[in-house]
Length: 225
Image (cartoon, rainbow, N blue to C red; front, side):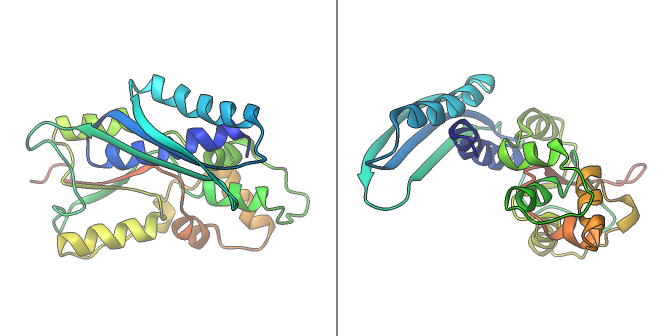
């Protein structure tokens, strides 16, 4: 990871949580715990990466703290935003018969992490989209806000810990079960190729892998109530 990637991702994961609740991000706090031997240029690049994403989403960095450590670097971000009354989304609210929708693709970030860790894959090229999804995920802020404002979804959650975990949590919070159609899963093509080359089932790997930061929605069935 480049320092700018670390800054980007530290904010992106917070914006994704806000997006999952249909909230518009407004501000963020940044606290850094830095080793004494860390290069100033790396600190500046990290902050620049975070600031660039903040600018794209009209987020103001309103404060924070910097301190020194003898241990590893710590990057701590807290973000806040706003959502109109009764326009927010939570994990609860899904009902039997709802459809499960997912933005984008799944599995790319998990495969990207394996690639960065140097896991072997014979005769398999490294697909750049998977690396990008791991290094610099793009929070689905506009989509989350639009789904809340339009009251198009009954429940939502981001895929920070994987699709399987999100489905389980939404179902538990809503008091219902869920069934996934493996053939309909939007698995990142590069991730599927990576796992197939290693003899790994792409479906199992994709639903278990996290850090995609896509959004899951429970949507009233088309033509239903």
